[in-house]
Length: 307
Image (cartoon, rainbow, N blue to C red; front, side, top):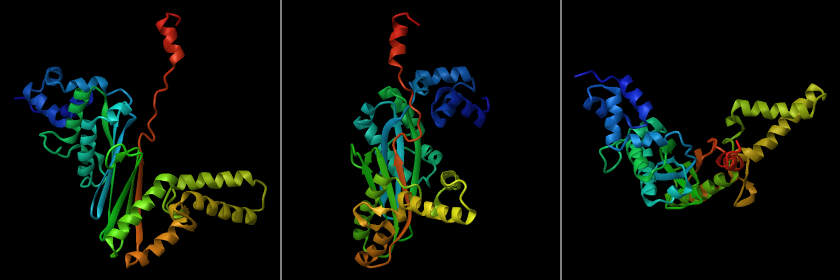
């Protein structure tokens, strides 16, 4: 019996796009013969997924799940919006979102979790769904938030099924106050975040490269000004930037006369105890994925033999 190494499993997985456990089983069944293992997977209907693995999957769903002091988001992609409306696909996303509650924001950990009611890990189960439905699908990313005491509230925008849609938001509120009040407010704040898409919680949390770019723009606009004047211009410009892009400084969409920080402070009176926003997460379907643009004219020309 040939020794099945981790490298062999990884190579077969990269070659076929099939989950690690199924790759290991295939290698074991074929005494480590790579080509025979590929055929074994094809015979099982699993390697069928590999043929579709190069297609861009930028549609799909963002799923949300909460459990008391923990909440999670997961993005599961498909090639078309049509599949995102498939009940089987939605049921799969719902289960994966629940598993994400215990994934510690690790996509790899999530992919190796046991899928409920199945003998497969999540990655292998998704591969089976690819073969069944006929489109490439991927578990792209996940994030989880938690608090010691309080709630993690959620909101899903453009919802196509319960807790699934195009944008998902989590809000982690720490407080000993009323959980009902916290959940209600958390959902409203999550709606604000879905609408405004803040860059960071506050100016101190803005990535250094983003701040550097903003400073460079201000310096270019005000080139030639004395150093002391430039310093004040930059400080004022970053303050304005924070009001537009930093969550705590933004005008609250449900009451434009107040900032988000002010509303959170006032929330303590309703909840019966001080409220602190510990973290938030916003996940939008397909952000960062480059979709291939269809060149219809070139395709027509090719079909007519003009290219």
